Length: 271
Image (cartoon, rainbow, N blue to C red; front, side, top):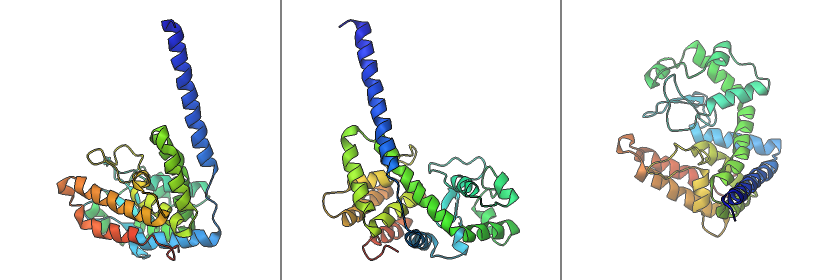
C-alpha cells in the first residue's frame, strides 16, 4: 500500500469512528428521562433537602473554604469576577434556562456576567440586602424550573460520559446508568449526584488525575444490584477524592456529610 493510500485509509477509518461516536451520543441523548409531575416534584424536594435542609436561607449560600456562591435547590456554582476555579460553573446555565422558560429575572441579575459579591465575607454581609432578598425570592418561586434544569443536566450527561471513555467501556457505563434510571430511588441518586459532584467529564475536576463525578462512580460500580453498588462506589470515589485533595483544602471536614448523603440513596427514599 502506498503512503498516500495508507493515509486515505487511516483518514477514512477516523471519519467512520467519529461518525460512530456522534451516532452513539445522539442515540443516548434521544432516550430522554420522562417524569410525571409528581416524580419531578419529589426529586426537587429531596434535592433541596440534601443541599440545605429545604430552607429558604439555604437557597443563597457561600460555604466556608470555597471561592464561589452556591445558589438554588441544587447549590449551583457561581464564581465572582476574576475567579476561575476547578469546578464547573452551573448557575449561569440555570439563569439561561429560566429565561428560556419565560421567567422574568431582576434587571441586575439578567445583566450580571459573574457573581456580584467578590468573596464570602461580602456575600454574608449582604444577606439582608435588597438584591439578596430578590435572589432568594426568585429561587423560591422557581423550584419546579430548577428541578427540571437538574433533570435535563442529568439527561445531557450520558452522551458526554460515553464519549469521554474508551469504546470498550461504553456499554458497561450505559448499562449501569440505565439500571439506576429504572428505579425511582436510583433515578434520584443520578440526578442528585450529578448536581452534587458533576458528571465527571469536566477536565479540571481532578485531584492527582482522579475524578469524583458521576462517570467515576459508574466506572467503579461492581456487578450486582444497581443501587447498593452505586452507594459503595460513590463512597469509594469520595473517600479517594479526600485522600487526593490538596492538604490546604481540608476536605475531610465535608466527608461525613457527603457519605451520609450517598447513604440515603436507598429504595423507599425516592422522594
